[in-house]
Length: 136
Ligand SMILES: CC(C)(COP(=O)(O)OP(=O)(O)OC[C@H]1O[C@@H](n2cnc3c(N)ncnc32)[C@H](O)[C@@H]1OP(=O)(O)O)[C@@H](O)C(=O)NCCC(=O)NCCS
Image 1 (spheres, rainbow, N blue to C red):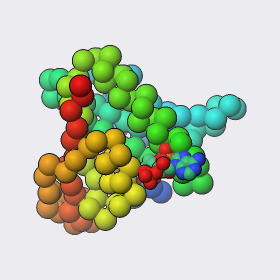
Image 2 (cartoon, protein in one colour):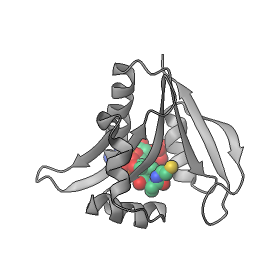
Image 3 (cartoon, rainbow, N blue to C red):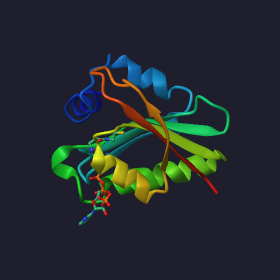
Image 4 (tube, rainbow, N blue to C red):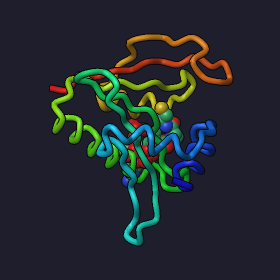
């Protein structure tokens, strides 16, 4: 949890109470993934929740800055989508800052497309995109 809190502050510029992560993952523990190296040092995480019947929502997704572009995000996303299919979810949704071109490109590669513009969605007033993809 200290790792998750640190990466959320650095990569997502948000500060949450550490107890939030545990409470969000209670209902679907397999939706909370942490990638670690061979010595168990955490490299990145993805926190997905199941708030709507048949759907997963990616709430947070980040890889440690110095570990990016090496496939960790791909590993997390592939594993997450497998777990969604194992639960027979039909759709996955997420929100992303409109300025976050790197993440938008990453999600587009995974067939996510923009379905809505969320005005002043972030705490600093920035707009967000809601993106979604169906699961075959
Ligand atoms: C989005 C994010 C999680 C992706 O994680 P990542 O570990 O860098 O992802 P990957 O390394 O699997 O893939 C990133 C890119 O590197 C490429 N790549 C992966 N391994 C590579 C390698 N060995 N050599 C060259 N390129 C490589 C991938 O093809 C991918 O290309 P893309 O730009 O078309 O998407 C990461 O950029 C991040 O943490 N960003 C900050 C937080 C954030 O914005 N989160 C999303 C909020 S909604």
